[in-house]
Length: 167
Image 1 (spheres, rainbow, N blue to C red):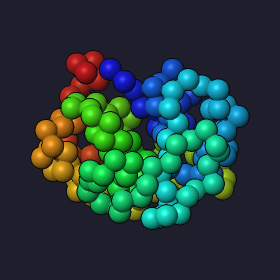
Image 2 (cartoon, one colour):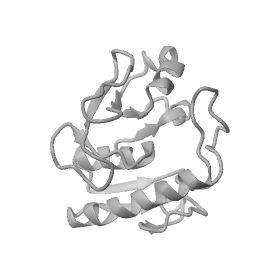
Image 3 (cartoon, rainbow, N blue to C red):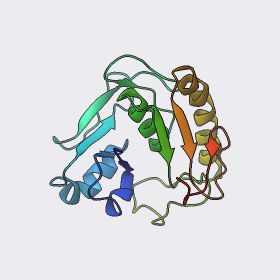
Image 4 (cartoon, one colour):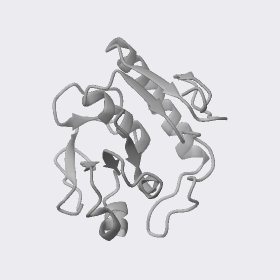
């Protein structure tokens, strides 16, 4: 099963098939470490037609709006967060079942705070992320894509949940 490592999770999954990050500043921060890793590196435009200042080895998807799902090849909706974008990417690449790990939608990332000037989530951001996932969920279901949240204690309720061990 192909794996997408989102942002700094690449440090736990250096053999992932895809490395995803939306923030050009994040790509610049970790550029030297990511450059030679196997796997596709992917990001998204910050707005329609605005190409982020990512390293040259990063494939940039076109911005297709904020919410929902974009069926056009090479386009994604931002969902205002990298996790939502990575789920969209998996669906765009033909996944029929997506298993989410590490999507607790509360507190900081597993690795703690990003270094400045990178942004870190707060409660308001998590509420916004959850709303965007709720808008994406029915779009995926309509397309026959099953999404399972395997994150213990996740605040994200729009997908079926299962225990990490069962997944």
